[in-house]
Amino acid sequence: MSTLANVTDIAIQMNDVAKSYRSGFLMRQTDVVREVSMTVPAGSLFGYLGHNGAGKTTTIKMLLGLVAPTSGSVALFGGSPGDLEIRRRVGYLPEHPYFYDYLTASEFLAFHGQLCGLDPKETAGRAAELMNWVGLEGTEDVRLQTFSKGMLQRIGLAQALIGDPDLVVLDEPMSGLDPAGRKLVRDIMLELKRRGKTVFFSTHVLSDAEAICDQVAILVQGSIRSIGPLSELLTPEVTEVELIISGLPQEFVLPGTHTEERDGLVHVRVTEESCDTDIQAVLAAGGKVVSVTPHRQSLEHLFMSELDAVERAG
Amino acid sequence: MNQILAIAKVTYREALRNRVMYSLLFFMVALLMVAAVVDKFTVAMEGRVVFNLGLLGVEVFGALIAVYLGVSAMAREIARRTVYVVLAKPVSRLGFLLGKYVGLLLTLALLVGVMGSLVSIATIMFGGTVGTATVVALMMIWVELALLSAVALLFSVVSGPFLSGMFTLGVFVIGHLSKGLAQMGANSEDGMVHAITQAIYYVVPNLELFSFKTQALYHLPVGFGALTLALLYAVAYTGALLAAAGWLFGRRDFA
Image 1 (tube, each protein chain N blue to C red):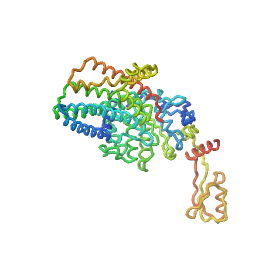
Image 2 (image 1 turned 180 degrees about the vertical axis):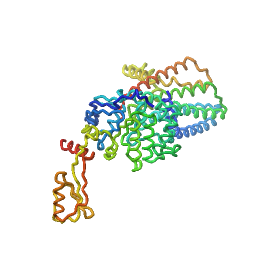
Image 3 (image 1 turned 120 degrees about the vertical axis):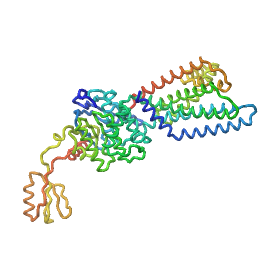
């Protein structure tokens, strides 16, 4: 267990971090990450969002010291990711994890416990608790080579947590998991936050992030387009109202967006301002309003609008 | 230190699962059988052919395994990305490299021990004798393989597995010829040839220093000076190779 005195207020601080590679015969430069800056408060659950190839994994590798930034600075709890004392406080699950598959689950966790500097007794206790937590109890003596993709993801999560880290960095932790597995990982992340840990995870599944994150950063083509608490990024006002209408004459056209017909019902999205007028027009035309659902801005809307903005500019 | 030992243990276990090692052990047994036939039809050899060819087999097959395991130890970690989770833990890159190296040393010790025992048993069966000099010769083969696997680790940090394997095998061959080449170069009238052979002699490790097979074969006393010199040379050379490998590995990006 880390002492409270060791915990600074900021878990991750990145200032103007960039990474570029040179490749090919002409050594052409590719900018993978461009001047990313972010501050992740200790104890928060931070979602790092972006489409495939946006630069999420490279950012995470720079956080862990696996990749050196071309420019800029990275600090974890105020120290360098290369500092072993700092890394003692960090747990990491890579995307599509590969492990020593000839080890059994308990040997694997014992190995990682040893790497974290735990004594065998402490490791055994932690391993038993984690195997139970990630839903792998009863598979302690099974070799990892027989594990399914979802089981590997779970044991990977267990190895990330074996050293009881203050900061848990998870790269696409829901990848390869069935719905029950996804819920389990979400619950684990929430429990880690409840225990005062910082969780930084990347995903391109926006519903996961929206459900549990305190803060998010949206990465598009290597640059952060939006960053902050969800409550600040997403406008609380109603942006659209969805009307479901029946019995509407075919010639009647409602000036809304995203109109479609399903099971004999017309689904139409209108603005909040025109909603009352539209309902009256429907009723006057002999139709019946079955349901009225207000829609607020979702993370998906925000993400898509940022993506569209970059594509239009590019 | 515990972390280095943990990595060494995993490396050792992985090496023991490698079928290439068992294939070469099979070839070692086949070589001993051929040597036994030759020995039987040669007058008054008393197991010397078995012993001589056997020790040569230990060295050559050992070198092939040292190159293969040395190169694949790092290449597999990087290619399969198993290295990511290990290096994200509080483990220094040099510590990881040393762990891999200690694992290789343990594997090679086991291998030389097994092959050396086979040779000794076969020699005794054919009327020969083995003594302290045999143990020294086998130990020095292990020291040579230890140096060679450090070469393989260094190459595999900066290059792909195929090139690393070729370069390390090149070092093994040239390392046994470098002294002779330097002597030939010294007698050459061409200044360039002289300079090149001298450069090879000083850059490539002189692996002939570790050869104590003649003493073992004829039960000659092993010179303390020669043994100490060879050991100091191996420690210094291996230390320099591992330091260079650690320095390069510390600067590597795992993209």
